[in-house]
Image 1 (cartoon, helix red, strand yellow):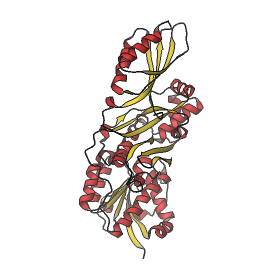
Image 2 (image 1 turned 135 degrees about the vertical axis):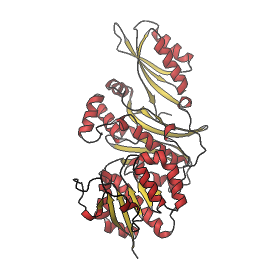
Image 3 (image 1 turned 90 degrees about the vertical axis):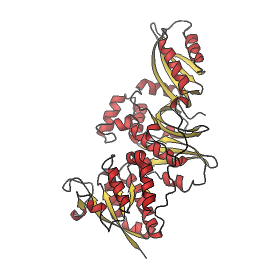
Image 4 (image 1 turned 180 degrees about the vertical axis):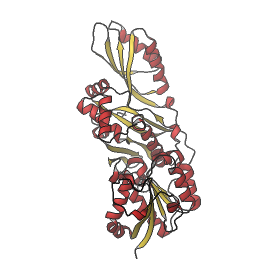
Length: 430
């Protein structure tokens, strides 16, 4: 027998419109697959008269959150407002009212996931957030269910479509940063204020959630090292290509002996690496397990319908739990206990570009300064030897961040080094 469940939407923007379309245009298919008849009972909006991407019955729209949060006919609240507030408050109130919540809100989950999951357990309801990390890519549920018996060693990948579009355009079209940012904004891939994307904050929030799920431990957002793509230049892109690399903004979480490392930053990847061919606005995440080896999840990481699909997946899972009596039994708890390794203790390799005085002995000086700080070099190439300066392109062995920082400081003090023009981490060659 088909069972009915009432849904309340908080928000009807890009993602909310996708959720509404799927629920109304594919409702029959959902009922056949899940045995649940999902009915939207109310939608919270700022302005009922505003133009929308979908046609909605006027009686469903409201500016009063109480019509959603206190409606006894609504069992599942779908939060797709975005931003920290009032979304966090509405999620908390819905949970306290005994309603299950599905959300795509990475900021709220990254900052408040621990307390909200605890509240959901207390209230014996569900808090689901598959869409908060990789849009339409099924990722969190496979980690929690299909890979429940796996000892995950690392998760890493491309989780921000805006920056990936920009780096791809810089690589394929030879454009500089300002040009590709303007193009991304014209096409709607970047916001008017693109800081959250280009500075890496969006990817860092997603990584905090992803690492917490993968390692079943609490990863506070303020423990995630974050560096964006603002300093990446056309020269960096060209230099990487010449050496056989591409530059991507990577989100990396890895289990090491001392704990886990979590970091977001631009990185050089070998051109043969699976992530190197993930272009445009697409996302991809690699999961490395002790038994299963390496898996790759690839697809649309954002957008109306892909993200809406992930939210609807959570709605169906929540409805099944509701009718089977399994609500309030989360598979993860963001448990405390595993330390996050400080960045200065993280080991990686580096690409380094210097502008130096073009005179005999400068290579020896650079090599000696690096070695004194414990930084050993894999290669050192001379480029653009001119009358006043030359470029040195360096690749290092694996080294701790603090040692590399020491080498940078020494190089910047050296009179024969005009400038440290760029340094970028190297990944994918271990």
